[in-house]
Image: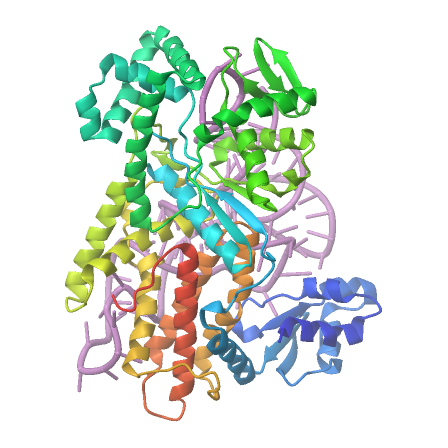
Length: 563
RNA sequence: GUCCCAGUAGCUCAGCUGGAUAGAGCAACAGCCUUCUAAGCUGUGGGUCGGGAGUUCGAAUCUCUCCUGGGACGCCA
């Protein structure tokens, strides 16, 4: 089944005395061009061992090597041994595989049903759901779906930012300038304005910061007034967030945020003391993890907690409750140091499970090359962007396919798909310059392009009344179909790499390539022509449709059957 | 100042642990809808892979150094 292994075995018979199978496997590569075959073995390294030119070695290997029936041709070209596979056989194998497994194609059990917690999205209460949170949300969601596909049990945790000094600030701002009715009418907007105003005023009146600290201390101590304000702000914010999650169709297993760990941090202090890790420094308590990293601040000089404290409590709690083997934190790049410290403190505390902890950082969303700052009110609201995307998709439908049924549903799926894909297609760690026009683009390498390709495939299958048949004979595939077969073949590997690298963009790029080769095929081959090869073509189209739909699903994007 | 990330076509980016002629999309221009959805397909132009040195049979990819941009660097998260 694995073509590479066949090649390794053949090569091993000839080269076994100098190179073992593992090394051979690593050396084999995929040729750059289709004209160079399907598998390639470079002979340059062998030149040293055999003291002969790579060209000679390649020629000799190509002649002597065992050729299993699946190898249609073996040739030597400028130091490479290139293998051409039997196209019909390979095509038949893959298509049958997909016909049998359907959307299960590409499933693996590398996770062995182990638990993986994924901490993502995590917006801050009393602040709007910004474009920045979108990144964490869609990346985390895709990783959870990929984890599931790979046999893990994901636990989706929305670690809401609902605690900390910011609430002291907010309470002060509200008590000084706020009005209850205004907040009730438009909670997020009003609370944000209060937050922004606090920072403006605090520049000339530093005393405000002290007041804020005092109010947070009250809050942490259980003060009734502080608590009821906090709860009110929190409830209003969660309502707003729910709207966004509904638009994105993303859900969580837990909304336990920072506040949830308030009654668990004393235990953390206690354990740290028992292990003699806590040190006093300028009135605050710190853990010196090692000499390379700055000390990790655990308790402020006024006795209140910090996010590191709460993150320690959260990690310990999650291990107890979920017994994860892996635990991901999908949090921005700028917090890399924090997580390094966090993980090392947990290691110093003697928890062996610290090895499963992993920070999955991502680049920032920039505006004019600079970080967007909530404090200055420079912020773009996700909800508005999503609404705009949906509206634009609707306009496109009215223009291009006015007879479509369920226009609103499709417009929703396409608009949201465009925004999600735009975020997912690029490597996580790159900063993104915010561009609404790019985000709302529906042509070229976009989510709608993939959805459109899927809709075309679905449409043909419907028109031809195609029913998948596991036992269908697949024969004589068109020459133009070969590039499709190659991509279908590499779907399972792509899933694996995307998950293991915490990199959904690999899947996104794969889907683009698959869609491209399919659209090319679609343009030159009349699929529904009534000849003897029609069943083969339809099975191919079906395979593409299944993989596109499943791939999109794993990215958190819907694939409408028509658009 | 110290540490981390990045620098590839006008713009946005691919390029897996080094390999055969550096690829897409957008933008520009030129074509393709009496036949399966033109949100598509085909073609043209566009590059000293930030600069320099090194390792290697072979470097956009690895090492060093410099330049540029961004971020982090104890009582924010």
